[in-house]
Length: 323
Image 1 (tube, rainbow, N blue to C red):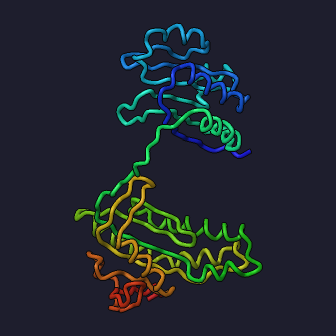
Image 2: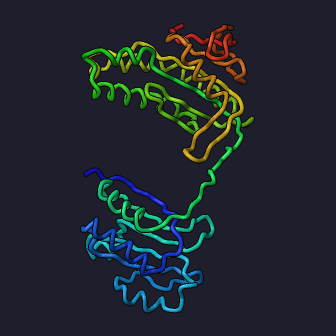
Image 3: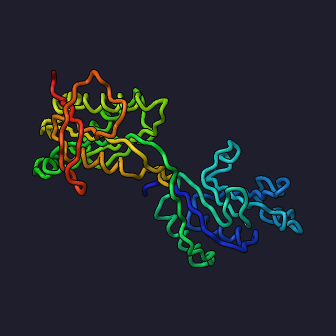
């Protein structure tokens, strides 16, 4: 069964140590390989219990000190050797109250349990322990910021994928080569975010007057050079069935917002860059007229393109053909 990192939080109130112990026992029942568990009880002033495997001793040391508890912890191991080496495999924690940035409730973390088995354990948590009702939406309005957005994608990719001789491993090979190619092109001045969008890539730089010109120059140079590097990919002996012929790119600049959840950026410059990329033929790069500090030595021409839903849009068009 596939193993992956699992991190969960359950908003449960009113658990005592015996309840926490019961949850730990349920976990060991489902995950029988974790035979050994060591408990720690963290008080607000100091540790009340530290790495204790015997529940009776934990209960004895806790007696009369329940109000001082900040956190119960249980670390699970498949052998005593793992514990002696300080190797934590899976951990359950319970916080009776919220403090600092930590929320009240039960938390679980592991990078070595099977998802299917964990689902069985989690079902018991949902069934046997009432959750704190919280219907208030979690809202983050984002941090306003100045951004430069570059969107790159492969022209004709969807049609190419529909050819009967093109199977998914071949597509994965093409896409991995494309992603690596774009990442290398952006390393001279790395963006704050690089997001893969199927057959495309979105790169975002948060800019300021101090580095705006550098970001613009490097984004434009990367976009202009990609046609050449893509031709090297297409000619590779790995791709005997061929590849889509061209790369399109759109660049825009302006105000957006940074959303910490998901580490994403949202705003008009990103939308415009995406639409410019979609409208851009494979032998050009379209740059919105709002982009400042464009290199004067790189030849460009005024152009008007149509993008949805904005209609006529003024851009600078840069040719990617060899001069």
